[in-house]
Amino acid sequence: MAYTTVDNPELYFQTKLYSGNGSTNAITLDGSENMQPDWTWIKNRPLSGGFAHNLYDSVRGTNKKIETDNSGAQSSETNTVNSFDSDGFTLGNDAGTDEVNKSGTTFVSWNWKAGTSVSGNTTGSGSAKAYAGSVSTTAGFSIIRYVGNGTNGHTIPHHLGAAPRWILVKRLDSSSGGDWTTLHMALPNGAGDFMEFNSTGAKQTSIARWRNATPTSSVFTVASGVEVNGDDSPYIAYCFAEKQGYSKFGSYTGTEAADGAFVHLGFRPAFVIQKNSAYTGNWQMYDNKRPGFNATDNHFSANSSDPEITDNADSTMDFCASGFKLNGVDNASSNWSNLYIYMAFAEQPLVSSSGVPATAR
Image (cartoon, rainbow, N blue to C red):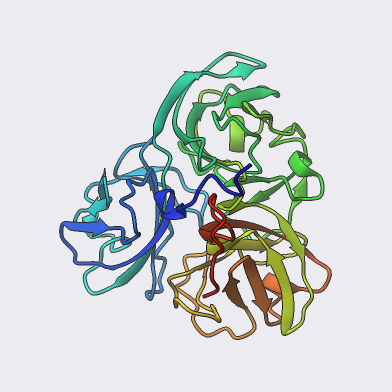
């Protein structure tokens, strides 16, 4: 059996840094292969004052924004992400919001590829509802837009062909009950726990979101909570299954030491999100482009509109050939004995399908 089925992760995930121009702006991803993204996540890097994380996807359609740092409803805009292109995406004049294309300002975008359209009806308890989405079984990623039915045990097809280990769900029509609900199977109680992506809060143990039902290779299950399954409300779900050499969704225990834990992934990471599950703290986001060398101290918080942090020596990360190494004593990344969850995507697998090893940065 091959070590990985994803020899070139840039076919499915790429980080892109760019500068805004306040007008039509075609952003070309600069990986070794062209990639048409289906999920694009954009953040203004230097500016403070409420410049949110802006998320767009091909399933909801262009110019439809949701934000990870709040519980707000989806907003329909003009001239933000106008198209998803064969080699990137095209921005308009930003409709005056300055959040994705302000002239003279730098931005980061994180981009994932799905690509195969899916549709059908949900199953489980209550009324069946129509859903639609986009999936890549190779990358273990699907985007599913579904409608809630307000019952416990509503099952949503994800089309991954493998059980997802990380799911993000966002209600689209209201800020009431609009908190981002996170399933992460490395939490102590699996689907019996949940966390909120727009919050600094610790994990919560409850059956009100995931009904304590472990996802299967075909569906995930939601309870009747309005955050995941309000009757006739629309939702978007981003679903991820692990793929050896490309993605991993696990946990580690903090050491609160300057020489911190090493987390083995089986690949050199391109992007990592991590969160203290037991304590208040941010969802910290690191990538291989900011600053592009070790030690990586540049990071954002997915739950905050704050600008990029570039000088926190107590919260740095080294990207290595087979995983990431934590440095510093920041409580958000390495508190003694606390359980941290992480989501990681590859720049290069440790060993390719043909047996070629990766090199360190």
